[in-house]
Length: 105
View 1 (spheres, helix red, strand yellow):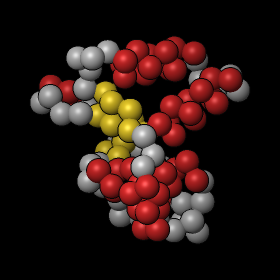
View 2 (cartoon, rainbow, N blue to C red):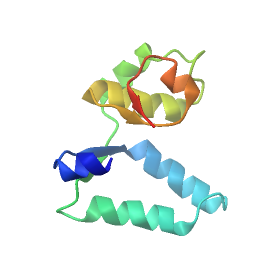
View 3 (tube, helix red, strand yellow):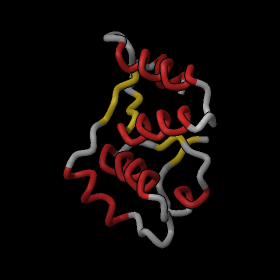
View 4 (cartoon, rainbow, N blue to C red):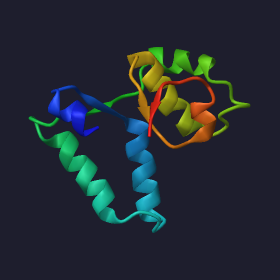
C-alpha cells in the first residue's frame, strides 16, 4: 500500500468497511483509533484514501461472488467493490481470495 501512496494512486475504502469498523469498535474488538485514523485519512483533502459508496453497479457485481463461497454480505460488497473498480483488494480472507479476486496481503 505504501507504494500505491508513493505513486499517487487512490486507495478506495468501501463504506461498508467503515460501518464494520464502527461496529467492531463498539464491540471492543478494535481500538477507537482504528475508526478515527481511517476517518481522518478519508477526510484529508490531500489524502489518497477515498471512501467508495455502494452504487447499483457494485450491487450488480455481487452476482460474481457466490453467497455459498463468501457468505458474509459485507465481505461480498467489499469484494464486489474491488471487482467493479478493477483494483486489487487488501484482505487476508481465504474465501475471497479463492474466488479469483486479485488480492494483496
